[in-house]
Image 1 (cartoon, rainbow, N blue to C red):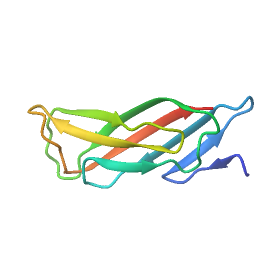
Image 2: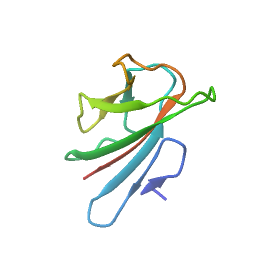
Image 3: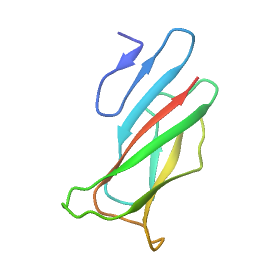
Image 4: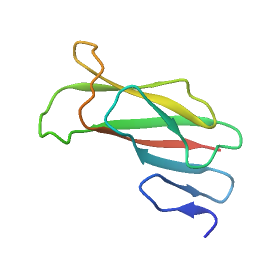
Length: 96
């Protein structure tokens, strides 16, 4: 219904006001993310991970900048601090 979108970039509104959202970015880093629905008050937590499409494995770090109720900037950097642009980034956000 109106309380959810179960797409690859979707959300679930829970009773009591908690909202869980998720998605996947493109290959470029950093990448601006707009939430599927704006949080009425605030986003309080984001977790993310790197998706490797090339088959290459490398240590990477997921970062969040410019966090707001409507979105954030996701970045992935390799062990040398260089933006990593291969693959995409999956993320999950929680707010109310």
